Length: 150
Image (tube, rainbow, N blue to C red; front, side, top):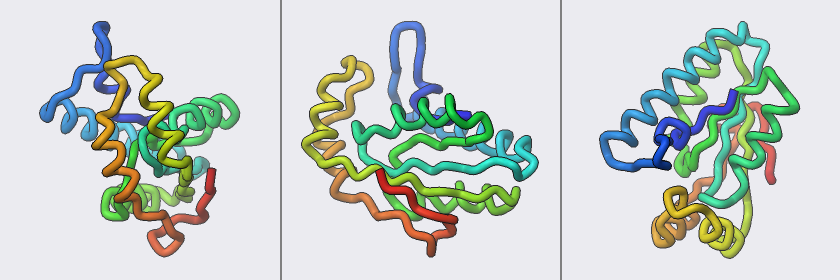
């Protein structure tokens, strides 16, 4: 299962953003995660993707879902440890191991990939730079079973 807040922001006219829509999209992601963890019977792995916009998270997620039908992938920026904590707590509650997938693409690569996206999917450049600068590396001390660096 591939869980991404952007999926809940898509409309027939493209991705529509806004404070209220963003809050609702994140709530839907957490609801989807809870259902996936509960339904897994503990036989899945939660992959928590960590990286700036344009680092390759969604491309990796699509490939992983195609290769591993039991994977639960939470695909979002997840810059800070505090943002990842609820995901790790949920996984622990259901006995599902969590693996951090840390995308370490250079800023220039992220900027170039972002610029090549359709306008409604393009992140603001200053926001992307801020995210890149604010990234806190994931660690096993947070509760991850392991860290996979891409």
